[in-house]
Image 1: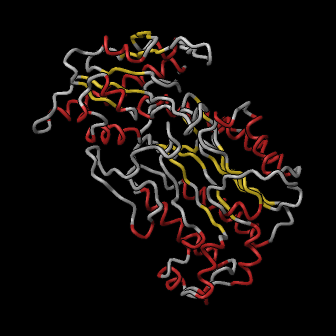
Image 2 (image 1 turned 135 degrees about the vertical axis):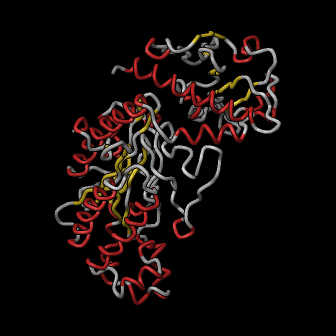
Image 3 (image 1 turned 45 degrees about the vertical axis):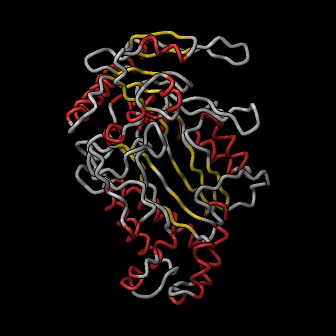
Length: 447
């Protein structure tokens, strides 16, 4: 199906979620009898004491409705009625304000054109029993929308929960975002093999998709050698990369607001043989973990399996020694795999709703032993998330153990040889289906 057909089905689905959410909210004891929801895309902000704008990112629940990343746009949702898109185009000679309103998505809305966001007041239901969603609650107050309905908790919990399951339209955007990102990853790999610096590799990824940095769903991570062990490494060294043995790149692409999140690790032939062996085993582990992404499986089970397998491979490669039972008890694998196995993916890279047990806001926080896990839900059809096992040699985590309780369980001479090679992470984007998991990153369209 084309985008127009998919988007129309998507909007019908999202409208249904909002109508059920309002019905549920209004049936609560002493419910507020909310008649509509106004969703605001957000407002521009500037750095302190400066007129330089901070890069704008539209509010996620607005982007759920409209594939547009512009400030001060709004959608009005009234049960039983066609949604209204308030297209705000202020008169301005400093900046480009034109909105590319294509029919494939605008046909799903009644369009009201405004030159000032405040003029939306003339088009809102007179009773003002309107819930407001968005960051700029001062704007909502100026519109006389009741403060107790600004980002009302029960409503946002409900909406966040259902953002976890994607429509056909959303999956199509994510699939295309994966296809394009893999073109960028291949360009990055080639740059690494030719001796490019971190900066060169970063530019190769962007150029492959004719992107600006601000077009990315998140800041690209490009780490050579020891920098690949910094989980959210933020720099881009310009120094010659011809002597580098390892490259880790974590980078994605956005399509109509939906971002891919993909990581690959590459090594040269003369990298440390133990590191090369660990990479090969991690690549197989990641594929095995993906196969666990089936309906009704707790996501934490993938995470726990990753820890068990990583512990075993560290023993096999001689990095850890001693009984498996003792190493498990001392949580030795967490020294080398300190983050969660993945997260929900969609409009936001770390999409909302990862810790909800139900649509009423009951929480399912991460286990105490795995506090960095970002997703702790049972898998449902059409959930989209990442699977990203990692194995790193991080001095700030390892050094305290040189005289700690794991001192005798770690092969320090081998660890010291491996620290300069940094770390490994392999990450794909997965859809839960009625059958086998759909790996968006490795689907046939990606190569």
